Length: 374
Image (cartoon, rainbow, N blue to C red; front, top):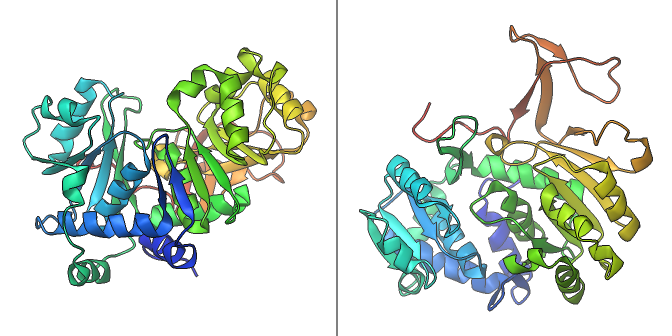
C-alpha cells in the first residue's frame, strides 16, 4: 500500500536500516537514522516559529545536510524552495518576490551571499536550526493533520516566458512518481545512485526520494569531476555506483572527450537519461562501454513531477529516427490533441499509423499549478 506522506519513506528506512549510510557528500555522510533525527530537530525548530503551510528557503551547498534541511521543512508542515549559489541574483530576487518567504536556512558557503540579497525574512544557519530539542508532540500534531495533497516543494522553472514560475508538488505527486520510477529502474536496497542534478531541480527527485523509498544510497558526485570524465569514471568505480540518472548532455561529456578509451564503468547496471535528446551515436558508445547495463530514456516535464514516460533501449541499431519517449509511467496518461483540443491518438505501442499533435500529460504526477499564478 502506498504511503500518503513522503516522510513515511524515511521513517521506515530509519527503522529498517538505522545504521546504513543514505547520502554521501564530499566531506560528510548521514545514515538513515541520523537523517531522520536531523529532520525532526529542524522540523521542531521551524514549527516553533509558528510558520505552517508556507514556503521556506533552503540556501545550502548540495550535501547530505541539505537533504536533512529540505526534509526538515516538510517535517515542520511547510514546503521547501531550494536555491543555490549557481543561480543568478536576478532569479533569486524573483523567487523571493514571488514566494514572500519568512525564513531561510543557510550554511557556511551561502551565508554571506544570503545576507547580501536584501532578504526581509529571518535567516538562520543550519547549525542554529539544529540547536532545538525535538518536540515530539508538536511534530505528531503536524503529521496528524497532514494531507497527501499538501505541498512539499516548489521547483522554479522559466518555461517559455523567461520568468520564474514555481511548480507546486504534493506528497501524492512525488509518491506516485517515485513508486512508478522505482519499478522502471528496478531499484532495491542494493541500489547505489550517483547524483548529478542540483537539489533545486526536479531531476534530483530520482536519486533522493528513491533512496528514501528503497533504503538505497546516493553519492553526490563532486561537480568538478564532470570536467574530467576519466576521473568521474574512477569515482563511479571506487564507490561501486550502479545506477545513474543523468541529463543527456552529461552523458555526452564522456563520449566527446573519449573517456572510454582510458576507463570504463565497472558497476553500472542502470543508465537513465533525459531532459534533452541523446544522439544515437553517443548512445552506441555508451552501450559498447557498458554492455551489461540497461539504458532507459526518460521524458517529461517539471510540471508533471519530473518524468512521465520511459523507453528501455534494447536494440540501438533499429533506432534510425532517434530514441522514442516510450510508454507512460504508472498512474500517468499521455495523449495527443489537435489544434481544437480534441484527442486524436493514443500513443500506445500497439497504435497503428502516425499522428501529429500536441503531447499532453495527465495523471497523479500532474502538478496542481504554479504558485500564486493560476
